[in-house]
Length: 134
Image 1: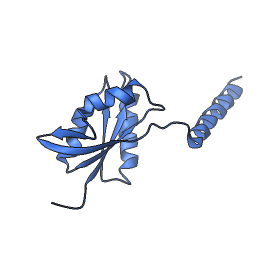
Image 2: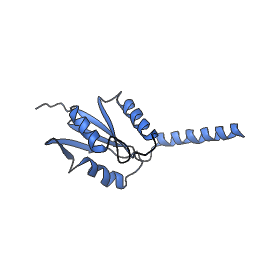
Image 3: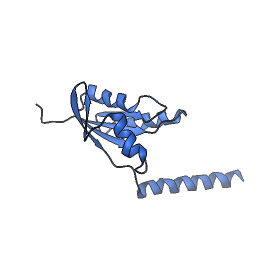
Image 4: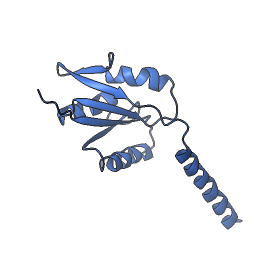
């Protein structure tokens, strides 16, 4: 038995019928791929892959520990109930092909000054566009 664990990162996005959601998922997965070898994304609804498929993909690539990273701002039904249910988590594990895989769900984004800085930038950009169009 190896003492070295292969960590997989699973990004969780809500999903939408609008293609921009999938583009965001691909973009964030590529960004995190610079720091982690195994990164996949999955959607709660509307888009593919679904969460369970993304989890199984990480397992097939050798991950035996999965860090689930919800791209959500706060806890709620998706965080507390839907993500564990869709991944098939019992306790801190899921069973894939008869093998247990350790799963940790990271905290939601929450209140963070870095996000507030981005929001401030968006407000300033919108003000600039508005001024330029008048």
